[in-house]
Amino acid sequence: AQKVTQAQTEISVVEKEDVTLDCVYETRDTTYYLFWYKQPPSGELVFLIRRNSFDEQNEISGRYSWNFQKSTSSFNFTITASQVVDSAVYFCALSMYSGGGADGLTFGKGTHLIIQP
Amino acid sequence: ETGVTQSPTHLIKTRGQQVTLRCSSQSGHNTVSWYQQALGQGPQFIFQYYREEENGRGNFPPRFSGLQFPNYSSELNVNALELDDSALYLCASSPRTSGGAPSYEQYFGPGTRLTVT
Image (cartoon, rainbow over all chains, first blue to last red; front, side):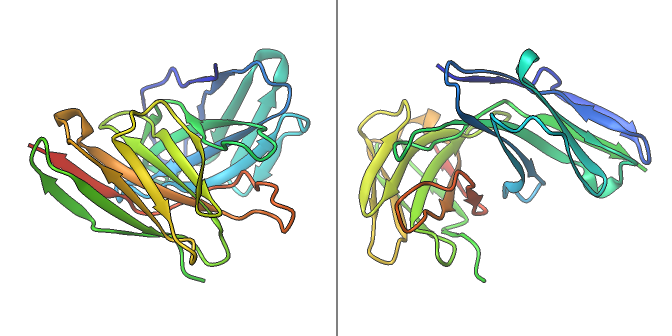
């Protein structure tokens, strides 16, 4: 069975601080995909990044960066110089490689990020 | 390019009733997945439709059923509603290659908030 753990229920920082959201996953599959989604108060999940299990390179996109470490089964997300607009619930998710079968995502419980001005 | 749309936005039903939620996939996306998100939780995978057939299912009872139409739009039907069915129902669409391989990137709609009283 797959499992995603986001131990931080809520994080509150002051604007311009850096913040890291933790994600630890469990899977028996050797091929899988990891995702981060952002859910603002409007409720719509916004896709941020997808990573496959063979690619452990860190990725940076503007103020966002992701650190994937297979050895510790972690896929952490860092926001540099946080802004109020970053306030949202962030979800880490896992998908097994099904080769055409069910491609449902397994989500963590989310981390509520509050950026204070 | 039109994103994923869902209707209705909000719905209130009584325990024991039946409900139908609708989803139009993003242009060019032929796979639709449905998720249930209870308050304060991460989304949970209900099922996925591809080529008008159920392609995989999460841990949900048979009273949760669905349809996919030739234009790739989809419906989620829930019979014999229970109080615990109160949640945000999210639809996600994703493309597949011409060979049928999944893309593993799912794009979500704004959701339908269902309240069962």
